[in-house]
Length: 358
Image (cartoon, rainbow, N blue to C red):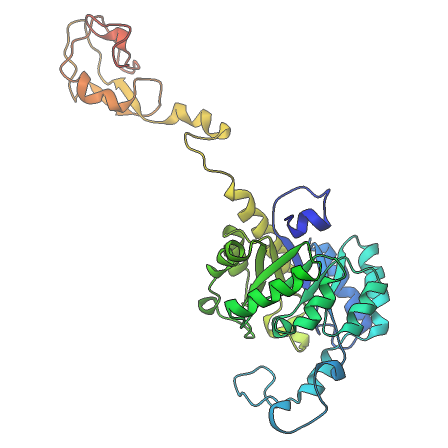
C-alpha cells in the first residue's frame, strides 16, 4: 500500500512524513483568518491543510442538560454546551469553496474531516483528494463505509479505540472500497502529555492491520512528532494557528507558524537520519580514516633497536599500522633506521615478511 505522500504527491521527492496542518476551529469564525491560515501553512512547508466539515446539528442536540454540557473541570471547554462549542468551531459550508480555491492557488493540498454523509457529498463536489475520520467517529461504521466508497485515501484516528474497534473500522473501510488506509495513533486529550502518547503502539498498528500508520499529535511542541517519525510514522497531523494569544477552541495545543516550520524541518531531518543498516563508515567519513589512531615511531631509532612502549606510540593520525598490532610488535627489532614520526609498517621490522600481519 502506498503511503499518503506517495499517493497524493507522486512527484514529490523525499521520504519524510506527510505533514498535515489541522485548522479545525482556529479560524475563530473568520473566513479571512481561515485563508490566512492556509497561506501560512503553505509558507511553512505543510503538505496539506485540513478543515472539519460539520454543523452543530450534525454533531449533537441543542440541549443544556446532562451530557450535552461539558462537566469535566479539567477540560479546556468546561462549562460549555456542546451545541454552542460546535457552532463556534464549525467551518461554514459556503467557506469551503474559497478555502479549497486558496489552497490550490498556494500549491497545498486541502481536504477535510466530514462528520456525516451530507459533509462527504459537499466535499466530493469540491474534489477533495482524501478524507479523515476523527477518533470520536472511529466507531461510526456507517460513516466510515460512506467515506470509503469514494475510493479516496482515508485516514482514521484511533484515539480511545480498542483493538477490536480498530479492527471493525478497518474492515468497514476496506470492504467498502478503500485501497489506501492510514491509521493514526492519537491520544484524545487536549492537550495530551508525552507520557500518555504511547508511540510504540504506532508500528504495532501497522504490523497488526497491514496499513500505513502515523500520529495525530495533541502534545505541546514538536518532540513527540519527531520521535514518531523515527518509529516510522508516514503521516503527522498537528493543529495549526496563526497566534495562540488570540484564543480559539483549539489554540492551547496548536502550533504557531514558526513552531510548525520547526516541525517540518525536524521531522524531515529525523526521516533522513533513518537511512539503512550500514557499518564501516559512509562515503563522507572516508577522509576521517586518516585521523584515526595508528602506530608511529616515537623516538629516533637505529636498525636492531627493540620496539618498546616508549618508542612505539599509538597516536593520531592514521597512516601507520592499526593499533590492534601493538602487542605483537612489542619486543620486535627494527631492520633499518627510523626517525621519530615514521608511520609503523611491516617493512621496518628485522626479517619482515610481506604477508606478516595479514
